[in-house]
Image 1 (tube, rainbow, N blue to C red):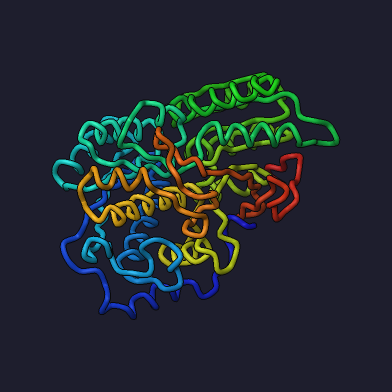
Image 2 (cartoon, rainbow, N blue to C red):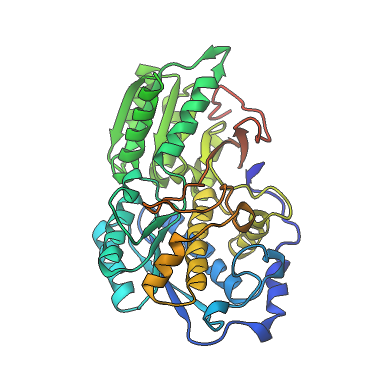
Length: 418
């Protein structure tokens, strides 16, 4: 499985084929779904990638796509159970600011009259924005934020499709307990995490999971998110010489760490980037050449010709000139789940959409992600979310773990730069 840049076949013809069905295009008063993304600020690259994916999703839903008929809403126009009314995306820029996310969520609900919300990328902003939706009784579907506590608040209107901290920590520990470098097991693990909700929560759950398996975390280095200089943190790692470093960072920090490690000549035997910034195409383009052999987590496999992921990835590349990364795909999947629930509700009433979300039971063939499906527990967490590990080779991520689904051999130690 290659997760990254790959040749395109005929998938862009999907939209052309769909446009041939213009006479059946969705008509009527649009149904509004809101999305909160960082369209400006340090995470703007990820936010605008997500915006392009969501705009593509709207076009796919509003215009029949026969080649994607296995997916909900793709064979028809608009929301067939609500008179064929079209979908309208209402984007809001949360600017990477929790209070802005709150205010924008309130505006989307009270002024734009959206029937559901998605977003908001960073876990800390999802935390504040979803609290507004909860207060107003509006469904909030999140496809990307992984902080465990988001589904531990007793909320009734919050639903999340992505794998979360415990899923992520478990696969890291399974991998690290099996991996060998130079014939030796890895023993000394370091965690470097940014200090917002995302970095802190993932670091904590990795530590707890490791301790539960009898594995000690030798070093943890929290740092201020969006730092201008990480020389001190890299020097600390260089002096400690861990076998494995797990970075939990957004894009600008991920790029800065890669460049600083090269400047200081530091390469750990195993380097793991926890998705987010390391999945962002901006990281791959800006720092990929000096981060060769980086291990990352993912759930998006666009390598199989004929798959939903392959077709949609090709359409996304036609639209943007770049391939869809895992985080962007997870955002799109959450949005599609929200839209499917609206249609199954047969109504724009929040309570009906909430009930439809609770009844969701999507199968793998109906998704773009490599999940076992989408089905929510009482807390709103998808119990069928799953994770795999990929490794950066050139400008592509290839699957290396678990071994029974991998398409490439793991290569260690970490190369970084040639």
